[in-house]
Length: 388
Image (cartoon, rainbow, N blue to C red; front, side, top):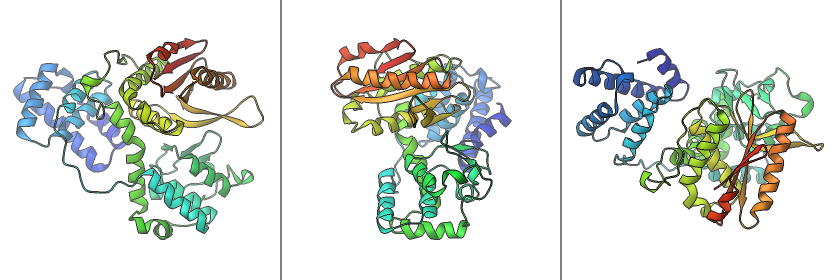
C-alpha cells in the first residue's frame, strides 16, 4: 500500500476519524490477503480475492460498510478499475440503521436568511452568514482577506489551507454588496470579528433552528453532495435498473470525453426522475453534485463569469478544468427542444470564442422524455449536445 500518498489523499477529503478508519480497513485487507491468499499487496488482488474477502468481512461484521468504503477509496486514489467491483459489492449490502438527526437543508437555510433580510441585517453579517453555507471552517472564514476573494472567477482561496471553495450565488451577492469594487483586491481582513463573535452572530439568527457555524458547514456538505453521490454511486437507482447503454469511462486522459461519458451515465441513472425536476436550478444542482463526486480532482466552477459579446459579463453554468476550461451549459426543455438547443449552443460558443477553448457541452433535461428527441444528441460544430 502507498501509505504516505493514501494518507494525504484521505486527509485532503475526510475528517480525521474517517481517515483513520479507511486507512485501517485497507491495511487489514492487505493483512487478510497475505494470510489467506498468499498475496502481499492490495495491487495484486484479483476479483476472486476481493469477493472472498468481502464474504469473510460480511460474516465477521454485520456493519461492515466502512471496510468496503475504505478499500473503494484506495482504488479510487489509484484510479484502479477494481473500484467498480467494490461499488457493486456495496450495492448488495443491507443499509445501516439511519440516525435520527434531522437534516438541515438548503431550503431551510434560505428561509432563515430571507427572514433576516426582512428584519434588517448588516452587510458584514449577511456576507458572514452566507459564507457559513460552504465547506469552509469557521477559522478559515474569519481569517479571509479581501484579496482571497476572486470576484471575476467566483472562487475563494483559504489563506489557512490553500484550498479553493465555491459558494452560492446568494453569497456572491452578499459579498459584492459588502465589498464595493474599488476596495477589492486589497490585502486587508474581510471581517472585523473573531470566533467568539461569529458564534454570537450565528446564534442570533440560527439558534432557534438548532444550528451552529460547524453544523451549518456539515449541513452544507451533506446537502450539496448528497444528490450527486446518490446518483454517482447507484444509491438511488439499483444496478439492474440502469440502462444497458450506460457508458463506463475508460480513461481520464481526455477530459472532454470523460465528461461526456459521465454525463451520459448521469442521464441513464436519472432518466426516471427528470419529470420530477421543478426547474433549471434543480437540474443544475443535481448535475453539479454528480460532477463533483465523479471528478474530485478537477476544478469545477459553477456559474463561471466571462467577458462575452455584450457590455455585461456572460455566465456559463459550469467551467471544468484548470488551464483549458471546458464549458457546460444546462437547460430544461418541456416543449420546444430546438429553442433550448439554439440558446444553449449559442452560450457555449460565446464562451469558446471568448476564452479560447475548443469544445463544450450542452446538457438538456427533456421533461417530455421522448426517445425521438434524444436523436439530437451528438457533436454539432464545437458543441457536444446531450439530451437526457
